[in-house]
Image 1 (cartoon, rainbow, N blue to C red):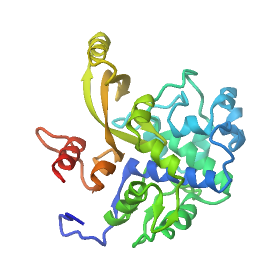
Image 2: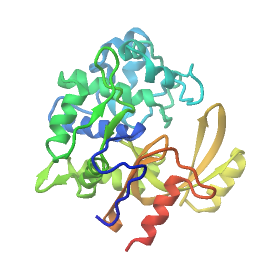
Image 3: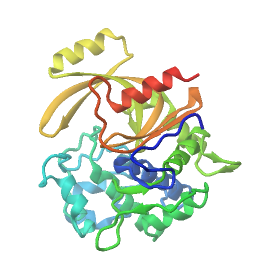
Image 4: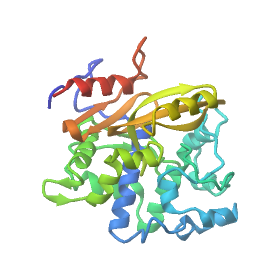
Length: 313
């Protein structure tokens, strides 16, 4: 432990919200369910586990579990955070998430990456259907007990007892860090191989992350980002970098912009208010941050963490 700091009279015993950091836990549980044979293959149609999706849209039969893991489903869902009427906010407050999922339709068959929280909720439903276990119960057995988490956690559920898989997992800083250590050690925990090493290396490989536009198996690639409002400017910039950068079209809160990326040899789980589990294999380093929304006149939270990592030998 190089540095540990708490504020506002809090300490290491307090549990903290993680928001979308929870998504990386769910992706990890999906891999464990596949290793145990509950999910036969990530190439299976998602309807093999959630056949009721076919009632809302027959196109779901063409969507695989891997598409859900990589957020390449083309699902019609609004990821706007500043409106109480958006799909993602409604998912966060509904008393019956399965009822919400049963209404989902596909808007696009292109299978491009689009960050939509409802994909993680679908993944959680797949895990529950495959294992016949509630997600918090499966988490407790397969991660909390297996890698020796030190404290009780809390996972918000709806009125039916279904965990809000896309967010709302609350735990201590050290227990969040332990998930990072599991990946840093290629899925091995004190001699026990919890995760298949190939799965972990797929996530940690910057070249793989480039192919998947910086998002793979519910983990983000650490990357340098430049944003453009004009697609031609972004395209010309990428072309001038000679294949070192790539471009993606993003929409958030009603605005469209074009982001260009250059992947770095690190990955992270990220929550909407600046929560991070950052893993840098080259530095043998894990950085965890929770807390309030990050406010700084020059640096955003991700860039601060990446700059900090560069300074640590």
